[in-house]
Structure formats: C-alpha cells, structure tokens
Length: 280
Image (tube, rainbow, N blue to C red; front, side, top):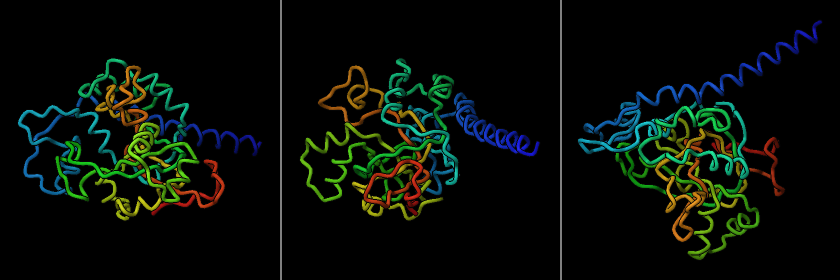
C-alpha cells in the first residue's frame, strides 16, 4: 500500500512538472495578439529599455519590427528552470520541416498557436549538447531598444556537432574564410541576451565565453524560431537556401540561454553525465 502511494505521488509530481513545462509554451502564445510595437522614448541605457519595453522599441514613429518575436527574445526564465526535453541534430531537422511555410519576418503572432503546439512547443526550456564553435558580438536591434554598447547587445554562440572540428578549434587552428563559413552553416545559433546577463549572468562577457571555444558544452534555454531569418539567403535549412550566402544551419535558436555547462573530461560527456560543470 505504501509503495502504491509513493508511486502515485511520484507520477503526480512528474505530471505536474510536465504540465508546467507545457504551459510555458501555451502561456507565451496566449500573449501573441497583445504584443505591440513601440517607439523608443528617451532610452539611453539597458535599464531604461528592460522591462519598460517588453517588445523592445524602434526610433521610428511607425515601427515595423515583429513585436511577438521580440517579446519571446526578451523573456527572462529563471536560471533554475527545468528542461522539458533535449533537442538534437535530428530533432532540429524536424523543427525545420515543421516550420510554417507562410511565416515571414513580420507575422510570428499569426503562427503562435501552431508553433506552441504538439511536436514543436516553442517557448519551452530545452537542452542541447554540442561543441562551442564560435562567439560573436552583434549590433543594435529593436529587441534591445536600438542600443549598441558592448553590454547592450546579444552574443551569437554557434553550437556544432563535429568533435574533430571542435578539437581543431580548441588547439588554436587558424580558419580560412571558407572554413569559417562552413562552421556557421553547420551550427545552431544560441543567444545570450544583455538583459539576461545583467540580471543573472554578469560574468558572461564576450572574452569570458570565448575561452570555451572548441569545448563540448550543454546549453539550456528557451526554444524559439527567429523568423527574421526564415529566408533562403540566411537559413541553410530553407528548401530554397542560397548555399553561397546562407550563414546558419537553422532559423531555430535557443534564445535566451539561461544555463551553460562545459564537459570536464577528455572523453565526450553524455547529457546525464556528472562531469558537466556549470559555467558561472
């Protein structure tokens, strides 16, 4: 009888955790229709941008950015948020295959219900194991109120899946332009946002993160489709991709990154290994 009660309790906790992770996707999608573009008013610092402008803002009197996309980008999940599932190269390909064909850089909200539904669950917290190929600084964006300071913009981190390539990067191998392009085309972009860094990860500077180039890492964060890049010239997964110009493996991202782990052994770490060290 006691065993049965414990089993029921365990199943109840498991189902509650599953429901909580599922609700995040649905809860975010429910906000899609109310996400509004805004014009910046005297925004001169990151603290004036977030959280005053949940969808960011533009200096234009008639902003044209995708408000729901920016709302997703500006989420700040708790650093301890649980992982709803792990994604892999194969599941990324599945996400690409299920990306709505009608989505553009301006209509993310139209597809919010589809993207948050079964098989995709955009907005949920996911994990990804791969190799850190590169860290890149980005420029001013409406999501960050057009700010451009070193501490006011996103970092792009490329997560790839080839251990041999990663070892070469770790050894300091100098890349040709073609090799750099290939790295970008075969890696998933995950993004570290400035307001998340300011609130929860102040040590995650550009130079600090670059020390992990070539290392096996586990990334945890929000699954999100960056529909600004669902075009052939950017997205190599697009059926009509321009292979001479595309610069990313997929338009899907982990954004924002809320936790980062590095493998501390010479052998590759399985996702459940005890050898993962949290990067703080």
